[in-house]
Image (tube, rainbow, N blue to C red; front, side, top):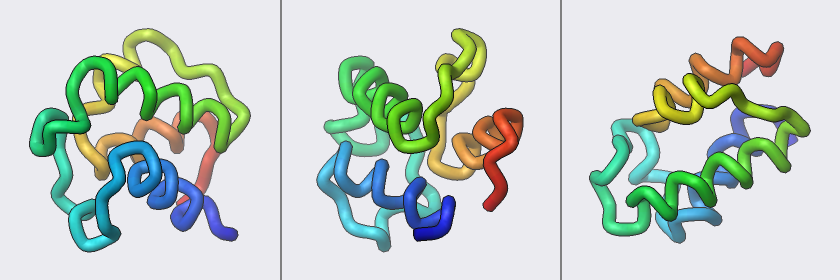
Length: 78
């Protein structure tokens, strides 16, 4: 599984959404991506990629696309 597939699957499984909903998905666009859902997403990303995200990155993670940019800081290539 590629890093992109793994990344997509984290969002799909965490928020119980379809792949079609991912591309322009932003924080609070869906009910599941509230503050509690956000922390679940962060935990799932950290587990999937075996990283520990900095607080600033957790706060900056406000969209599906922004998340890819943030993970690239941790040497995760898409």
